[in-house]
Image (cartoon, rainbow, N blue to C red; front, side):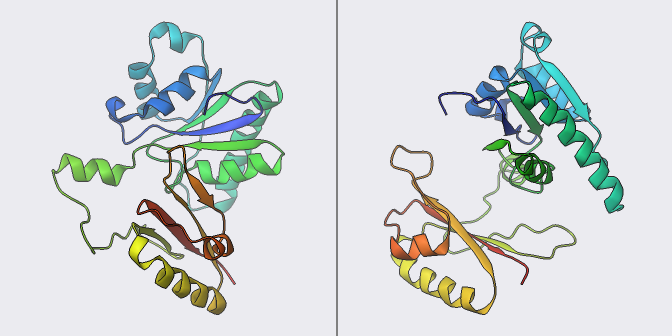
Amino acid sequence: MNEFRTKCLYGVGLGPGDPELITLKALRVIRASEVLVAPSSKRVLRILEQILTPEELAQKKVETVSLPMNADSIIIESNYIGAVDIICNQLEESKTVSYLTIGDPTLYSSFTPIRKLVETKGYDTEIINGIPSFLAVAASCNETLIYGKERLEILPSNYSHNTRVYMKNKSSIQDLLSSLEKESSEHPIKVFGATNCGYEDEKRYHNLEELISDPPESYFTTIIVKEIDD
C-alpha cells in the first residue's frame, strides 16, 4: 500500500499487546492517520503511547468508543451504530481514519460489524493485519502450534459456524478443490484464498469457481472455507 485513501476506513491490528509485535505496515498506517478510533481500552491507549512520540500522538484526533461485551443484542447494535456514526463523520470530512483493534481485525474482532456498517454507508474499508494472540502465546510458551499434518482449530467457547484454513496444498490441490466442489453442492460455503500473499506475484481468488478454473500452483497457497447459513 503506497497511498492512503480518504473516505476509506483502515482496520488496523495492534497485535497481542507487546508494542514490539506491531507490524511495520500497521505503524505506517497509524502514523499516516489523522483520526484514530479505538474501543475505550487502556490497553490500546497504552500501546499508542509506546509506539508514537508525544509529538506524533498530539497531532492525532483519538476517538474512543464504548463497545461493552453484553448479551443484549440491542445494546450491542446501538453501540456499534454510535461508533460508526463517529467514523463516518470523520470520513465525510475526507480524513484518513483508522480503527484500532487488539490482535487481528479478521479474528473475533469488533472491526467486523463496524466494517459492514461502514461499507453499507458507501465507504471503502481496508484491513491491516496484526499478530493474533494465539501465535504470541505459543511463542511466549516456546511451543510450536502445528507441524506436518497436524491440524489447528480456533474456536470460541460458544461456537456455531466453522472456518477452515488450508495451507501448503500444492501436491493435493486438485483433490482439495474436488472435495470443496462436492461440499458446495451439499451446503453453502464461501471459499476464497491467495497464492504468494504479500509478494509481487500475489494472486487472489474470491470464490471456488476462480480456484477451479485456474488452480494455484504455488506451495505458498492458502485457501479459506467458511460455512454459511442456508
